[in-house]
Image 1 (cartoon, helix red, strand yellow):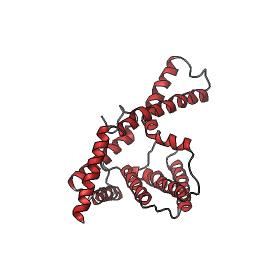
Image 2: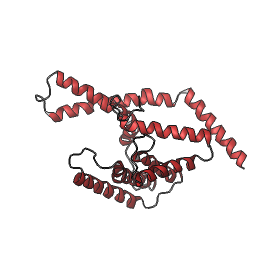
Image 3: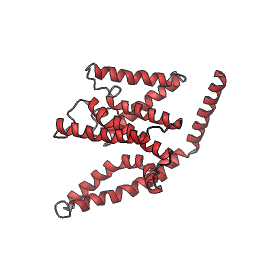
Image 4: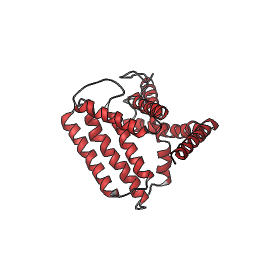
Length: 239
């Protein structure tokens, strides 16, 4: 159900499609070329850049520019794993300014907010600056210049569940408001606030009762153990 594009059945499919594709490529790369996974992903990302730089339009879910945002995430994770935290404030400033410049560019060239510009512009205007922002924030924390409060951290833990649930619950609640005749009678801001009052607790319940339970299940633990054992054996073989 996540393969079709555009997808009107699953509300979050516009990005879940690409997550599915990314993890599929990772899985195939690990299975077929376990010691060359970075090279496999680099080749894929380079192909995406080449296709769009050459002006070749393809509707394939394997070649859209949005998958380059996974490359940004990999780069940030690479730096975090190596405890690199240089240029923290500079990176954050570049990201914020870049995001603002990208929003202005889109406003000037796509005034109807219809995402009418070529898809690569979305990655350049929003994806790349976001990568700088994420790196800047984690680097600032690593340098202990500023840290997120526990409330923000818990919200971050539940953010994926929040992403998966919010559109579905918004749609259901909005339909109920229309059927009950509340729209136009109740202040719009009150209705919007009520959506968040419902969605955020549901997301926390989903995170703790579904997402975290699965991640801590015996099956996941055994798979993770096998992966660590395989990695250890591979290291021993290389040694």
